[in-house]
Image 1 (cartoon, rainbow, N blue to C red):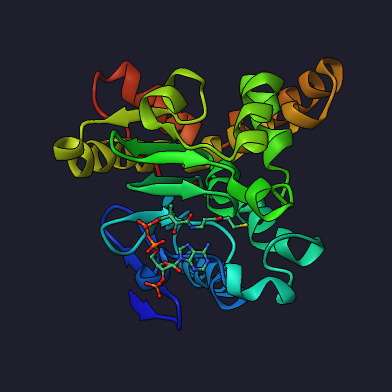
Image 2: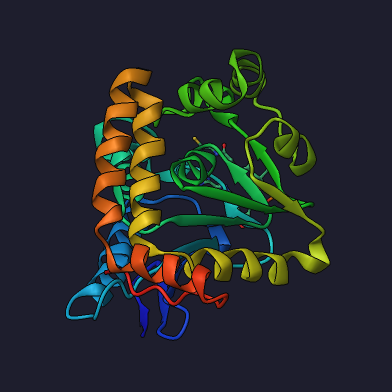
Length: 265
Ligand code: COA
């Protein structure tokens, strides 16, 4: 499937089960206009439709990237603040949609990843960055703070000192530092970036999809809950996964010394 929304390109590769959303406002460094935020949600909905009528889980992973040479996303569209693109409840919708999306979403970051762009990446399950990418919360330069929980999330990942440094100074940090601080999962050399991301995504897409969905829910719950509640939730997910065909296939493949083939059933 190939579809062009107004500001997002949507692709789906049937063989791998990998969907790709490309934020497509390169002239504005993929800044988050209201249209772009809506199109990210619409693009994810189109990809989720691939599961309808499929034998198991068709959509295994989604890559979110930015068009052009310079940016993943330079944050809220500064021209569109009156449409609440910088903050407020409506600004949260595409972030929440990514967090709640059943398939894992990988932010493929090559260039500027700023403000709402960084918050969008933080809503994803994984952040993979080229070494020349930079990260920051420039909102303070406009007299505001990151409106979609950026300070909260960076504090949870890397502690309050880094969150305050980013949000109070507005300075950019390098991909290398973002990697050291745990803000991104992996930093790859620029000339190896495409291949490394493809390898990471293909590995992920080959894993048992129901287990991947359960792990996403478990990790997200851990962020919000106490340990006791989280352990009970994991036990419930575990019991459900024990009953799946994917579990039987994984166990059989291990016994037969072969690669498993998971269908998401
Ligand atoms: N909203 C709207 N347009 C933006 C934008 C944003 N957040 N960020 C960049 N653009 C536009 C610029 O206005 C420029 O448009 P133009 O060519 O029509 O003049 C184009 O994208 C390229 O940006 P430019 O500033 O020329 O590129 P640069 O390489 O010199 O600088 C940045 C890149 C990211 C450092 C700089 O654009 C910047 O600071 N952007 C604002 C980031 C920000 O504050 N985001 C959070 C908003 S809450």
